[in-house]
Length: 161
Image (tube, rainbow, N blue to C red; front, side):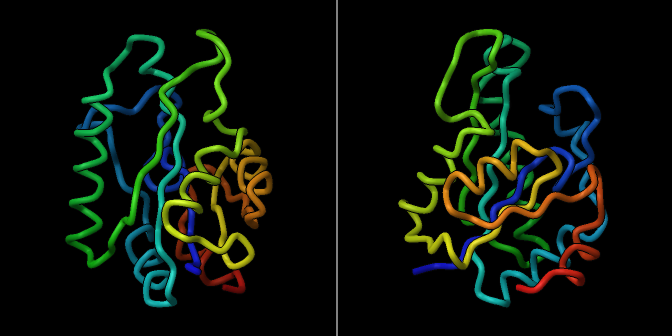
């Protein structure tokens, strides 16, 4: 079974602008994200991103826009020597109805664990909102709450992995 490091996107990987981030020009990587992920990867973790993208349901952007941005993100990680194993996103928003995949629901984390043969007891989820931690814990994964727009190298250095 695999160890998986789950990462929220906005506020953990890239700067959270307090508005929907779907354009490459608005996607700014946070300090330490590549270096920390490289350390986790070397420690044997698969890295998977789980993110809510409710702007799709609101009609602000399309699935294709999310995919283009995630391809840009993956390319930048690959250039830094980091393999992002997978990206899961929920396109729904509570204003449009209920769904099972939106965090704090744990469905996307559970799906990733199943698809990638993950061991929840050896996996972690780093997020900047309580809903990230609730989603992690719902799937049996340990959650780490960090400050929004924090430096992942600081988190890496202070956590027992």
